[in-house]
Amino acid sequence: MWYEVDAINRGLDSASTEEIDRTAPRVSLRGFIEATKAQDFDRAAHYLNLSEIEPGRQSGIGPEIARDLSYVLARQVWIDWSDLSSRPDALIEVPSDANPRAGQPRRNILIATLETEGQTYDIRLARYKSPEQPAVWLFTPQSVDNVDALHTVFGPRHYENEIPQVLKRKLAGLWLWEWIAIPVLLVGLAALGYATHQATLRLARRSQRKSLQKGLERSSMPLAILVMAGATQLLVTYVLSFSGTVQAFLRPALIILMVWGGGMTALRILDAVLNRITLRFVGTIDDKRGRDEREFYTSIYALRRLIILLMVGLALLIVLVQLNLFDSVGLTLLASAGVLTVVFGIAGQAVLGNILASLQIAFAKPVRIGDSVLFEGNWAYVEAIFYTFLRLRTWDHRRIVVPVTYFVSKPFENWSVASAQMMKVIDLRLDHRADIEVLRTQFDKLVREDADISESDNALTMSTGHTADGLQVSFYAMMDDPSTGWMVQCRLRERMIAFVRDTHPDWFPRERVQEVGRDGGDAHPSARTSRIAGSG
Image (cartoon, rainbow, N blue to C red; front, top):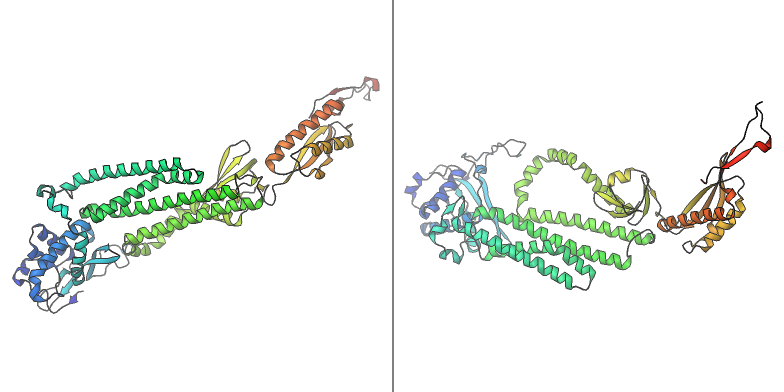
C-alpha cells in the first residue's frame, strides 16, 4: 500500500505540513502546481521526497528544485487530471476488460516520461509512510534527482526574460505570447516549405537524367514537409519553449511528420531508381518482351511492395518508441486483443486478402506484368500489379481495374505464360466446290511473304467443318506475340477473301433452292434455280 520510511523531509519546517493535503495523487499534484503558481516554493518543496538530500540542506535546496520542476512540468507535460486517482490507495477504477490491473491499489504512479540526449527520465509520484505521520503522496527521490538534468534542457530560455509579464498570463490554457508566436511560426514554416518545394522542382527541371528529374518532382512535397518538421523541431529544442499543452500536441505531430516525410522521400527516390533500372534492362514492357524480362519487371514491383511494407512497419515502430506508446497502450491492447482481432479481422478481411493475394502473384508469378491475358472475354495486358488490385490494359487502350482476390479466383488465359508465341486461326465459310489444295497453296505463299511471321513452316490449311450451307476452311499460322498476331490475322483474312473474290468468286457460299413438282417429286432439272446467298 505504501513505502515505509523512517522520516519524511526532516530538514523542512514540519509545522506547515499540517495544512498541506497530500493524501491522494491528484490532490498532491494539484497542491504542488498551485503552490508554484503562487511562487510559494517553500510550500511546494513539501511535495517532494528529499530523502536523498542531507536534512541540513533540504530547506535551502528543496524550494529551488520545486521551482525548476514546475518549469519542466509547465513546458513539457500535459497533465490528464481524469487519469490521476483521487483515492488515497490510487485504486484503478476502470472495467476489467479495459485494464487487467483494474481493482488493484497502487503506490507508484507515472506522471510523465521525458527523453533528452538519449537518456529517459521519469517523473513519478509515490506513497510514503513514516511511523510518526500518515501516508502521503510525494515526488519520488529519483524524480527529484532528474530535475537538474531536465531543467537544463527543458527549462525557460534566455529570451523569456525579455517577454513582458503581461504576456505571460494564460488564456484558454496557453500563455498570451504563445497566441502571438504560434501564428508567426506557422507563416514562417509555410514560407520555408514553399521555398523547399520550389527549389526541389527547380533542381528537377535542371537535371539531365529523366529518372532523377522524376524522383525529385515526386519527392518535392514530402521533402518540404520533412524540412518544415525538422526546422520546427530545432526551434522547439534550442530556441522556443512552449507550454505543456502545446508540447503535448506538437511533439507527436512532429515525430509523425518527420517519419512520414523522410519515408516518402526515400520511397519516391527509390521508385525513381527502380524505374531507371527497369528502363535500362527491360525498357517498355509488353508481350513482345521475353519471359525473363517480364519476370524481372514483376519482381521489381514485388520488391517495391515489400519495401513499402517494411517502411510502414519501421515507421510505426519508430513512432511508438519515440512517443513511448508501448507502456501506455501495451496493456490495453493486450487486454482487448481478442476484441481487436475480431474487429480488424472483419473490417480488414478484403484488404488483407487482396494484399496477400498480390504477394502471392508477385512470388508465384501465375501472371506477370506485360503478360497478354484473356480475362472474362477481354484481351488485355497486365499493366500493373498493386497491393489490392490489378490494372489491365485492353487492346483498344481501355483500363480494367480488377481486385486481386477476384482475379485469382476466376479462370483466365495467360497467352504469355511460357512464350509470347501463339497460333492464330482464320475461318472462312466457302462453297462446297472450293478447292482446298488451291487455298492451301495460296495461304502458304501469303505466310512466307509476310514479314511479321517468323515461322512460316507451321502454316496449316484444314477443312474443319461441313454443313449443308457450305464448307468451313481454317487457316493456321504461328505468330510471334498476341499484338502482332492480331494485326497479321486481320491482314491474312483480307488477302484470302480478296484471292477468292478475284480468282474464284463462285467459291463463296450459295443458297440453293429446288422446285418441287405438283406430284411431290422433283421438278425437271431445267427448272432448278440457284442464287448467291452472300459471303459468310
